[in-house]
Length: 464
Image (cartoon, rainbow, N blue to C red; front, top):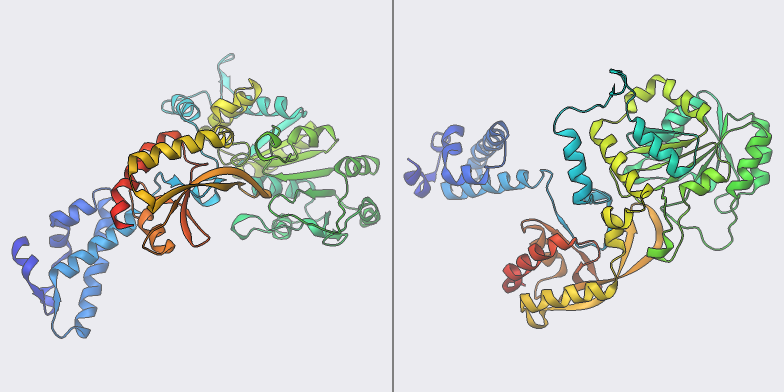
């Protein structure tokens, strides 16, 4: 049956093979090996219905092989939507679309060890009674930040929402007009604020907000003052920003809590890697801010989470809010955070947090890697090695570049077609197009992926 169908022409709806017959084709089975059977059947059924509709516009019929190729393309397209590892050649270390901060093998192994069986997630081994979820992760967090207490939810937007909903529901919140930012995925600070039930009181202008602007707005009887770090854009020229220390002092004087949304958040001196110091969590706490919130999967180099540190009385109030339970994280996130924060406390973060391992690689090392790759690939002048500029990404340190090295492809194909060729590889390689050339930046490529990348380029070089 299969052999006859391969050579046949589908001329009418009666000639269209059934879903089951199509699914039994060995080429279809091979292409759909990684997909659950119900999804495979759904793809085939859609293709069968489509070919029946197309027959009306095909007086000479449709070759079965054409139909088969269409089904296989659809299966492969669906397969590519599954979560899978990719090679990040964009030069963006914290790439939002590629999973943000990469996890190290040591961190992942620790998570695996703690979660492949049962764990003491909410069990106190010392007493044999119910324990408190995330207790050690919170303790590590407070030690690192030098705060009184800490709280963990599922992302920083959730952290900010919880703070606003707990402390300012149906009350006023002061925010500078220059800090009403939009974060990734289209979420805007004013929208989060409104959904929390708080009322926005804008102060200052886009480029100038002084401490006097905040002081004048206290007449509105605000529940809190919100300071948002402009982490994903930069204001230049005639600008002025209220100092966080002065703002915290103003809040204390008027018994109005000051909340600092750091966005990415960081515990280390980023100038070592980027030449610019990003405001860190410890400084925010030392300056007297009541609550500081930030992300766990950006400059911290861990998993998605929203971390909150600050005054114990306020943290306790957050945890009593019923919304807190809806925003809490699971055992995998707690295990990852406990391990990651432990690396910072032990000062082992450079070696064990992959983001900083990649960020700290010197240019000389990347040039050496690139030269060895080109020697192995033997593509002549089709591929050259050039200095490049990488970015931290993740909405942090805008306009700051990091020296890097890139493979530049002088292909007969357009840069867009070259990019598409690499996207079709296994694993997919995501590069960037710059100055009309396709480039693979080496900064964010893990050492374990270099051999794979070299092999992929060797296999594609004749097509370039």
